[in-house]
Image (tube, rainbow, N blue to C red; front, side, top):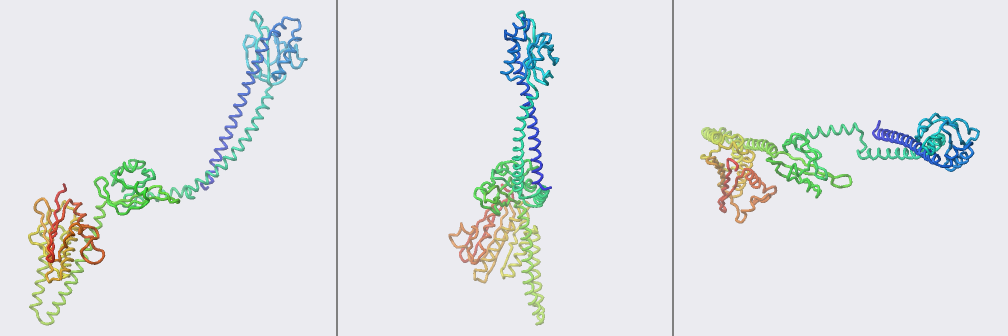
Length: 526
């Protein structure tokens, strides 16, 4: 059964039950109230008649009914009662609507309490049928009960009044029922429209799929409504935020969870933000923020995804290592293929001594640099980077030297990703600089030391130098003194990595003679 049909049946049934219950309750209350009011009315009339002197004086005469009957009939007609009966304490009637019954005994069996001096309201079957009766005693001058006044209203007449009201109640109930059914149909349609025509099973399946997707996402995800209240969060986000359960996050104000969050600004501007670096606790994350827009184009919330920057650096590290190794292999393959061609030619020319000398020289050079790097720069990431740059320099006909006084062992507390970024970009810039100098000497020299409290990296080149007046621009993103596109990013990345490591960079340049870059990185952050 569809949701819309279920809602109509449930709401309609509830309305029917409520209306029937209220109708029966109202009818019962009306009948009870009407009986109570008519009983009080009958009692008031009976007490009034019992206190009239004419009635009391008539009891002293030989034929009391001659004075009491006309008076009682007048009272009956004026009050609308079915009967006003006056009798003595033996229950003999002195008045009755049917004159033939005067002088006969009163019926109903409810006179005992009245003969004791009490006024009562009773429901009994009299000579005219079932009635509600008010009975009051008649006292003489000595306070003795000398008679009884009984005023009655027929139950049949009360039922007619109740039924007249019941017909009205029934009419209003039918109208209310029709309105309720129409309302239930409209409510069911509105609910159906608000949930985009989905059935409960489909909604449950979507919820399960959403939860599975949230947990499958490696990035942290958190969303807020238009009031800035957190409505959704996944486990990765809770881990980054340092929260154990969803209850610590859901329903809370976003600025109480992430004090510097810009989700509220994104909702105000309606513009998404991508790959923005921010701090969450002691972690640096890369965040994306996107506004949530309804079908009318109004911003109703925002969602943010973020990932620990160290994870991104790890991926970048793996990529940079693969790239470095690929470049090293490519350069090495290209360079050694040339050397093999030369050796092959020397052998064909029967210049065996020259071929042997070239083989020995190349072998010694390669083994020398590898042995030195393995001994003084034992970190495989940094060592692999430098050997790759050495092979690349050989391919470009650039002399790349690593100062034999270098020592770079004590770097265990330093982020390798930042070091790769700093060393790789500075050496690449130096090689590009010497390729543009137009001179025969194309040399790049690197020096590394871990002595003292700081790491020192020094890279010297014989390039064209840095023009005067550019001291504050060379580290800007997109700025470059070299021609071509996609330049001006190396030193910007170096500067960002140094900021993260609390280090700094300086340089000294001489026009046409070259540049020396010096990097200082503290071994332990302050």
